[in-house]
Every structure is written in C-alpha cells, then in structure tokens.
Length: 183
Ligand code: IMP
Ligand code: MG
Image 1: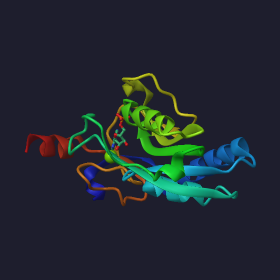
Image 2 (image 1 turned 120 degrees about the vertical axis):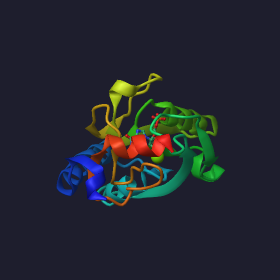
Image 3 (image 1 turned 135 degrees about the vertical axis):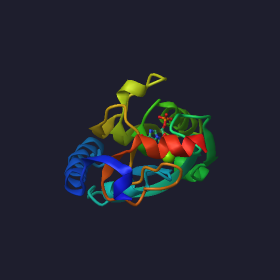
C-alpha cells in the first residue's frame, strides 16, 4: 500500500501528540459536564477510539453512519444511514466527531439533525480540516490538524473503501485515484 502514497503528512507519533492536545482541550472544556462522543462511521472510528482513551472523565460513546462520497474524491449527496437511539440524543451534550471536515456538508447536516431530535448541545471535533474546500459555512469547535487541498488516506480515511488501516495519514498518488475514477 505504501507505494500508493505520494507522501506521508502525519506519522503515528505526530498524530498521537496532536490528539493528546485536543483531548486536553475537550477535557478542560467539558469540566464535570457529562457528554457523549458521537463518532461518524466509518471514517472517524480510528480517531474516536484514540481520542476517547485520552479523555479521563466519564463519557458515553455512540455512532452515526453517513455516506456521501461513494467511490470518488468529490462530495456527493449525503445519506444518513442511522442515528443513535432517541434516549441517547434527547437532552444530552454531544461531541460529534468526524475524520475530516471538507465541504462541511456532513457535519452541518448531522449537527442540525441531532439538534432537531432534541440534543441539549452539539459540539464538533474533527481529526483533519480542509478549510479551502468549504461549501457551507461551518467551523469545528476542535480540530487536530489543518490540511491543504489534497486527497488524503489512512488513519480511518479511505479511498473507495481502502487504506483506512494505514497508521499514518498520507496523500494518495494522483494516478491511483485518476485510474479508479476512469474505470
Ligand atoms: P464533507 O461533507 O464534504 O465535509 O465531507 C466529509 C466526508 O468526506 C468525510 O467524512 C470523509 O469521509 C470524506 N472526505 C473528504 N475529504 C477526504 C479526503 O481527503 N480523503 C478521504 N475522505 C475524504
Ligand atoms: Mg469517508
């Protein structure tokens, strides 16, 4: 898989250092307020599992599933496949977690949906942020790293379902996705 990667942007050590920083911010900000981390599947499961283990206060974990990308590298229509049960949303303080904030459509839509279903508060936390790609006005409350406008994979992020298991984040070689999109 390594020969599909143009260059490594963040290695394992840098990633964990960045997550330590954000975990400390989240911990300080919630104080003694209990909250639920809501991980957006599938991409954020790797990030969420490292993040929660660095937050040393009581919290719960829930998942939502959304798919917007299909097999391409540009944002398609968003589909919410499932949400947490009502009792996990209503009156709760939620920390919505995603792998990457790109156009912003996914986070924006899911945050609105959770508020509509009665969440008391929804904060957001992303592993990567590509501000240059934003199509809707949306800023995340917490983010680990900002990235330039490159298609990146690894540490949960995929291209056509692959590369989620890479322990680092890398830019995918252009010929790999150009080839797949031409097929
Ligand atoms: P948004 O709705 O455009 O902000 O898209 C967010 C979703 O697009 C993320 O949850 C990712 O699944 C996917 N995505 C956006 N950029 C990338 C990338 O560079 N690599 C892999 N997935 C990406
Ligand atoms: Mg994805």
